[in-house]
Length: 214
Image 1 (cartoon, rainbow, N blue to C red):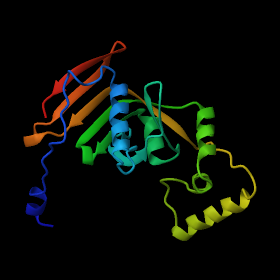
Image 2 (image 1 turned 90 degrees about the horizontal axis):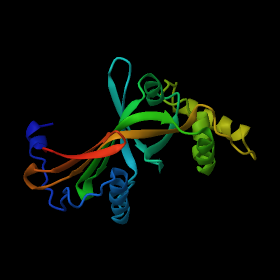
Image 3 (image 1 turned 30 degrees about the vertical axis):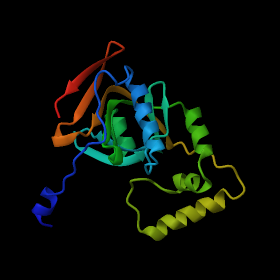
């Protein structure tokens, strides 16, 4: 690929502005406002977010997961506890979330400590999932090396047979986490790359607001 092709890919952002007088004083409320606007704009999967973690060697990894709730000011997602992200969160229980709503020229970056949610709430969410998703969680040893696609399909068929006509209970290796934020940054694209960046930092249970240079 020609570098010139990549270097000439650019877009001007002129859709809105973000300033200290209009942003809500509570960043969770501001996030919910922006999230609702993304839903109203009919963006595809507005709850998709990048989850970045790091292992004990400080090597980062990232992947897309789905936000499934906000609980007491924390951002909730579900996954396999034995997956790579689960293992990294066990070693280093801090993470970054990044939401990118391209059509609205907006980003939200969340950093904070990660803990497992209450097991009962994980049970409740698991039972609310479609049957296929439940079976997939049982069948797949997420992030582990497997022989081939056929092996995975056989595991799914085995799970379907084992649970035929039965309620599928949440496997112990699967459940929810919540990211308890200590910083939340709101980014609004502006012209000439002079973007608006407003950063909330939690200090002694109060949110401090500062503007960052783009």
